[in-house]
Image: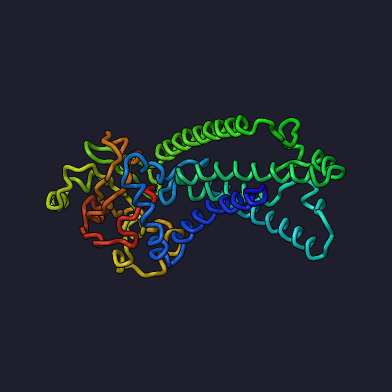
Length: 383
């Protein structure tokens, strides 16, 4: 296989993470969610059903649960900005390249190429970083790191080729520009790698890759734990409660206490055989609907459609003293204390909706969730 064929295959491989991540983001943001999830169902369920691989599809940053961390909010906002900048840089580079080809102007060294040698790769690296923050599954972060290594290899291969084809003009251009960032931001002096012992070089690159992936996984786990620590939570003997809209932990606890003292709730939990399971209680404003939690539109059909206008189809909490609690059985990767339920939970199975009036201090309604939510048993973010 010649160098051009290898580069072509690697370039095709580098596109895979973008297609997969964008596809998953798309199905979560459109009316065609159920259809898109049908495509993802087999691989997601395959990973989720095995305790060895279930952690790969866990999310790192909050998806629908609010936290009190400005840092986490900043990361999500930064993700959207990075995607926008990356897309703009890619379009600029694309226009320059193809204008030069159609106009037969030769090699492109002006414009953005006067600062960066590989602006289109740099654009996709930045775009991918943004996507990794917005849609932050463990496997997405691993794929992102892998993609960077592929782009780096492709860039170096192209530079070696240019050095051979243009020995007079390319070295000066190489020396005044950066690979993916402006020269001023580059670390130290760079040169085109041309290893004599390719086997040793490949072994070194692979070792570096394994180390970087390891650091990425450790960082992701630490950030995931930080995310969970910034939620409004409460714990009991066999449950963890988390408020979807951020409220004080004291209010979260008070809401759960009112619910668990209700005799009808106790009876219903006993009938459903969940009184001895590990449980997750999601506390939210009464009018909210979250399809990730198995909630269907019919669950709140008594409310007019116009109240569902913000992200995830919900408005600000206009009735803070009325809460809805989703009681779910927590399917865990491993046995754990209540404080570790969110950390090791790979799936939640909705059992009951309990509506609570905080002013009256009592349960006002109990309903059953849909037998099958929009995503059924397909793994979705737990927070």
